[in-house]
Length: 225
Image 1 (cartoon, rainbow, N blue to C red):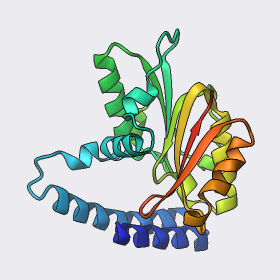
Image 2 (cartoon, rainbow, N blue to C red):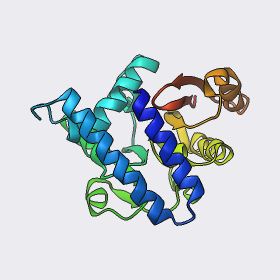
Image 3 (cartoon, rainbow, N blue to C red):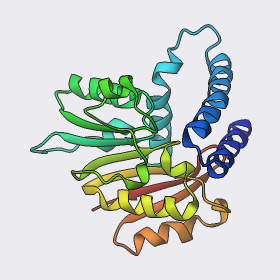
């Protein structure tokens, strides 16, 4: 976890210092592949657990269980909903989380509309998400209210803190009633600012809590009642 945190900080510095987003993204991918290989070898040396495919779903599910007390599926499900559920993944990569969510909910007979945000166009994301957005997430505004918004190491994490806070507020206002957002941001001195940061959203009428995590930075949980 400590190594992951250091590598993330390194990538943030690259992205902030480099005006060429493509070069910065390419540099970021290099350490991500190295880190991913190390994690896979440590967790599943024989490759039997399918860790690479399920990584996003499993990681999010663990976060939801720890900070919300329920799994990610339970957080998204809404009884008596007269429309499909809506979920947005900021930093969706190839859209594996969205694909797994859609498959698991389909087993329960629940329909879901998914939106995936990536830094660059990705055919796999386009195939796995109902709508794929491949531009700067800072300027993206969801067309419909969302029931669940997630961002593990998405665009918010790599933005300057002030921009990340603005984008987090944008996502908070994009939630439908009963909606939940779980966002990870890289906030300086985050360990000492949990209450202060959450209060900014509570003062806007949301139910927000913030938790510092060594690998994911500031984990911001926002609920709209």
